[in-house]
Image (tube, rainbow, N blue to C red; front, side):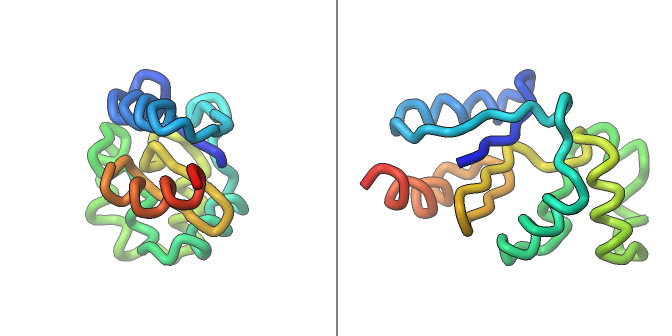
Length: 121
């Protein structure tokens, strides 16, 4: 399982603590140092079944500075994926990739349902 996170993000820290408490092993990747590529993002987006907007860090400063709330609806999926690949601070985190399970953000209930049964059995 891959955990893509930003070490200074409090939500990411909570997610790591939760994984550790559940004894779920993971490989870490710092999103600031190694942003996901367009190809990775496209693959994860397709696997997730989520709307592409869920991959954007909508509460982030960069998202707001770039006025993406207004711009995203006018952009193609291709353009949005290219934009996400330019800067890790645009990507919703933590991001978990575990086989065919892709989760954006840390929602404990969702993680419990999707990860605990699969990785602690």
